[in-house]
Image 1 (cartoon, rainbow, N blue to C red):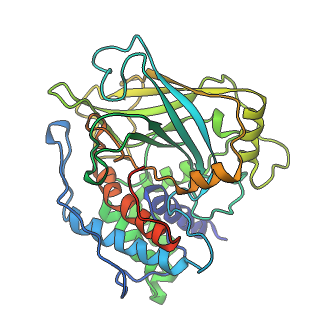
Image 2: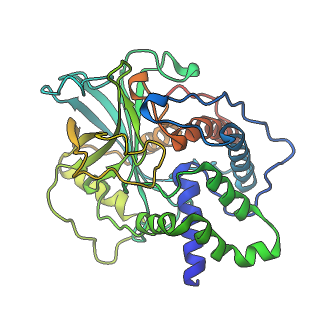
Image 3: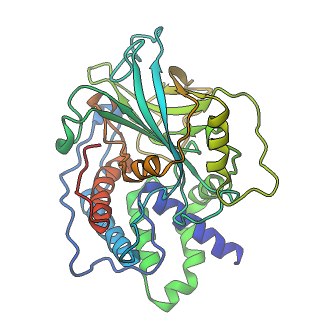
Length: 385
């Protein structure tokens, strides 16, 4: 594979999978028999710097419909339809999420109740659209936390009585796309059957994304880790903290308590990250810290997901400890539960409302594609977990 072709695969795979979709073959944007997603007008918080992009509602609908077509075309009867985002799981583990007792008043919002402990499930994953991609190859890694027993009405109408709160992160602090029209362009470019488009696609994609987007794609997918429990993860995009006049924009992160640099094993297997997690938790417990990064200047954009909020200017603060006890998680029952779970940044209290165009797009894509996957797997359609 040439360097340009490899770069095109990385960019397409990273953008489509990290955001919620993937396309392994040319896909038409309109297909008979597919339903149209119902999309409400996006709501924004202008006081925190949110700003709608041009034709945002229409673009979100086109993206959701295009990805659905791809899912249905890839589906093989008799086989399980995998989730579009982060299809390869290293496992779901049971955990405790304990909020710090000494939390400052301005951070003690939403689930961050001083001294409160929540049961949690945490899913660790690979980002690449190929669920059979070996773990020893570079890739973006994911960490999705689902807190259980969270009271209060939630953001999505369909799950106002739900008792969960999700936090979704990847192993890189920024995202390669900040304009959803660029995302739609990537889909259309990848879907095209035109010969000239196919020929020039490896050149067109990096040119369209620019140097910043291309470099972020490389950096995200080049990372290799020795153990998901010992990696650091970031939200990449901002969220709201609080609902009153003092609400603020934040990002969040999770980092291991373990200090050191675990080495990659010699001649690792294709699934060595699952094996490493299993071995760690068979021998003992693991722990991580959950951090919040309040925005310290309006110059730190909530819409531009390509720009990092530098820690030197906006420090992270520990708000909770995550303890992962000794356990055996790699069982058929636990893996089935993990596969059927839905993780969505909009599974949230109003105090943790997602911000920015990428999150607004996720609000459309995640529940819609989950329903498609449930239908393909002959499961009851449910968005409430």
